[in-house]
Image 1 (cartoon, one colour):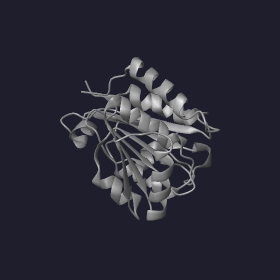
Image 2 (tube, rainbow, N blue to C red):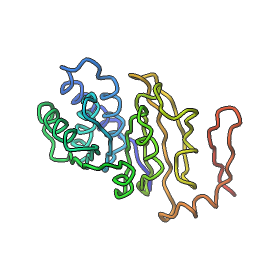
Image 3 (cartoon, rainbow, N blue to C red):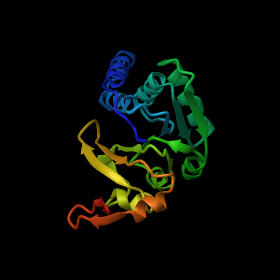
Image 4 (cartoon, one colour):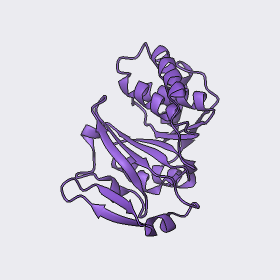
Length: 218
């Protein structure tokens, strides 16, 4: 199986997010990610957040979880961040789907979650970007997002360098939304065994872009 796009769900989440985030200044990222997460009917949406960060994107992801009847998990580094996040979210959207997880190491928390099909991290923080490589993604595939992509903390960032060996990136794209969104779509696994999937594919790395392309063996 694989993630299937639902334009109706995407549209409903988008409209809901526009209405919910009308009091915020910058909402384009929140609206886009909400529609994308909902449109792909994602059931486990994970994000990272730290005290002082904007809250609009989190609101959009919470809205998406409402429309997919899924889970929205936010990873924060400390109790101060948890308290501020909880307060801001309560004032914006009511959602029983949202969970807050406190962890000194975001990599450790991500590694404990399984079935992730939508993950959003902040490109400005290197430890968050590195967590991409530890994500236990859904067998149906996943959508990975680096927000603030124009401010990446890791020079020369390439998806194939941060993801686990054998991860099949179907496509990746950079979108000039907000401060940039770098998005990768990971393909569904076969039998849940990434190594088996990898052995059936021939890898080619574009010498100019550094992007990894996989071609299926006949």
